[in-house]
Structure formats: C-alpha cells, structure tokens
Length: 207
Image (cartoon, rainbow, N blue to C red; front, top):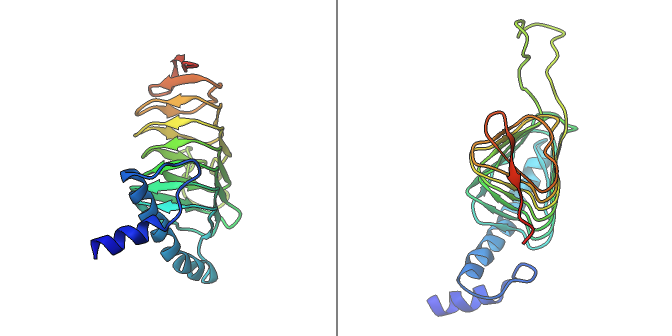
C-alpha cells in the first residue's frame, strides 16, 4: 500500500521550478487536497458565498476558510499552510493574491480591496482594509461612517508573524514587516519596519 501511495504521489505535479524530495510530497498532497475542496467552494458560491478563483498548481497544506460575499483570487503556485481566513465584508470586496505566494495562517478582513503581489511570504498576520467600527464616540445608529481604504502589498514582501497591516497602507516591494509590527502608513521599497506603530529599522540587504 505504501509503495502504491508513493507511486501515486510521484505522478502528481510539482510547483514551477521545484525538485522532487520530502518537501515535494507535502506539496503534492496539498495539491490533491486543493482539488478535492473545489466542488465545496463552487457550491458555496452558488449559494451566495465567497467566490474563489484558484490558479494553477495550488497547494492546500492547511485550511482556507473563506467567508463573506466578495471575491478571492489566487495566482499560480500559491501554497496555503495553517489556517488562512480570507473574509470579505462586501459583495464588491476583492482579495487578490499574486503567484508563488506562501500564506501561512494569514487572516484577511476586506471591505474593498487587498492586493498582494507575486512571491510574497505572509505569516499569521492580520491584514485589514477597514476599521470595522467607527472610531468616534457614537458607534451605533444611522449615518455612521466606518474607515475603509485599499491595501497594496507589492512583490516579494515578507510579513512576519503577529504583524498587522491596516487600511490604506502600501508596502513597497522587497520590504520586510517585522514580528508584531503594526503598520499604519506606507512602507518604501527595500525597508525593514517594526514596532507599534511601525517605524523603519533598517534596509533590506541586496545579497
């Protein structure tokens, strides 16, 4: 049985540029799992739930728990580990993840737009384009405005665990968001930021 399982796994595809090995087995099992959940996602869409679009060679090694009426789009060669929660809070909301991204327990809250470029690594961080509640003293009743602004994370950004990226922020390409950082303003390219609120603490090495 183990031999047959091994043969079956070797027949499954690999991500672009990958070499066979122990890690490849985990990726291939995730690829198979990703295909198995597609009918469930389609059923949810038909029933008015999240609309999920998945690119080629998607590997679901953890859980991808979508909620809300918006759209979630994944590029090619995306890997999901741990429990990722792309939640949308409006029918027009869209979460777009670039190709070759690794989502490792990332939590999204999207009312308008969250865009993640290619080759990003996102740990179990919080990425939210809305305040969810008004910041003024009047928090219930008609006519209350809630802050919402798009988030853009450019190519090859690493967001470490425990970080938060809040509404209206653009993170420049090749930057690093340190562990536990709370990002409330734009981050230039090739910068390392950390702290609460996040401040620049160094440049990303070019080697």
